[in-house]
Length: 215
Image (cartoon, rainbow, N blue to C red; front, side, top):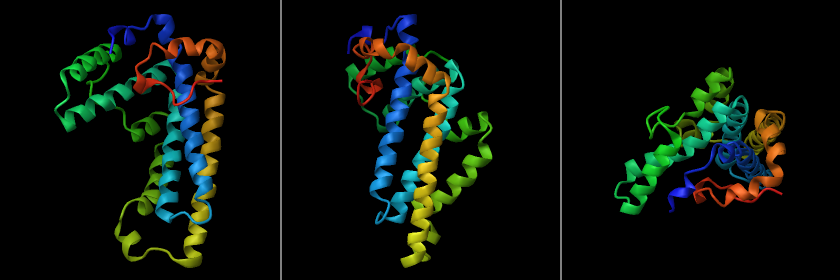
């Protein structure tokens, strides 16, 4: 991968929060669509998993929208995640290693290059620690093969009621996340740069591009 892909100018880097707005909006939309499909007959663990992901996106939407620094930190965490995976999986090619060095220079030395910010830390920073921990705990009881989900799993009407509760909860979280994004710093940057964003997309590494180009 050419070095120029990591050598964005200050002005080009300033557009990245607008791209992050697109990424987060599309992620929320994808999970909301999955939730709609699972509304009536989706497995309870699957519906809980989708809703828990929307809970995390609700946290990230507010955290990233609070400041340019938070948005940049989250963007750089995409690189830190890749560095962490390469550390754990081992054996990357020479080309990948060289690319990782370019990526490390891009994200700087705010934290160790493999240390991404956990969502729980982001929740605490924006004053939603209790909200996140309480709700994540409930959903995780169904997402993971806990003793309760294995031995005392819900059936019949009880499962239907829980599924509807998780569905309603997930839709509410999705709407809140989208509202937070739209009224945030990220939303302002997106509206400012919307017409010029595609010019920046061509210079970004593939792993940092949105799934779709903005309209």
